[in-house]
Length: 307
Image (cartoon, rainbow, N blue to C red):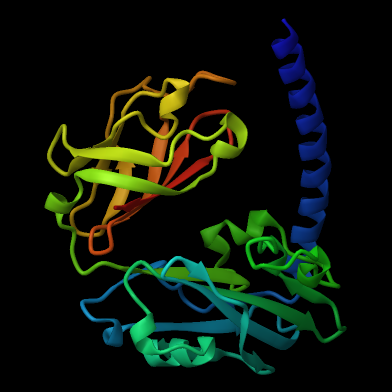
């Protein structure tokens, strides 16, 4: 069939690209670990979630070291998503000696972003992105991973570094404790399961770009089990998806897949099943933010906001 031929061609091209990129990534990663500018957290990676009962209680701290003793300049920047709106990128500070010990309160973060502490709320995200320059003038950094379109800039050259950018292998591996890109989100003080049922607007759905619009709203009901909710019709209701059952950790709001094996995530290009779900829920602001994984396919992202 024509579709099968297209899929075979696509997989072949993808394997060539992946092979080519992996060789380049391996060289870049090896060079960085041996003599590149490699800022890393001294003991452990700072938390990706912070739970507070009041925004004024927020404190975010970390210590950074120069792993290879090669850094002449560490330049740290910050951007955030406040109330669902992404800010510009702001300078935090530049550092020429290590170790670096930093602590940020809600007031500190507000000052950097040029906003009031009262503007910061539960569910807001803060993203740190940095570059590190060696004593030989070579620049390393993870900020090439920023999506310049999302930042309101149509010129990608504004977000391309002049030196050797680090690879996704290093950025995504917690064991390296890299301090190029890191972030955290503010959790709600508690999870109120009684607030889940209702109609939610779709704030973002990644697979709309591939399958066509799947509707502007989703219905969420309680159950079927304790600490579970169900998104009726799942992420792709117009593509014949099964209902999506989410298991919610009542202490943290972390999400996992709570349904039976073999349930359909989508049919077109598939079928693809609900293999894993991760994410967070925020009952204090009526938000569900999840990633859905189906084996052999790119992740799908779904963000729902209660009406």
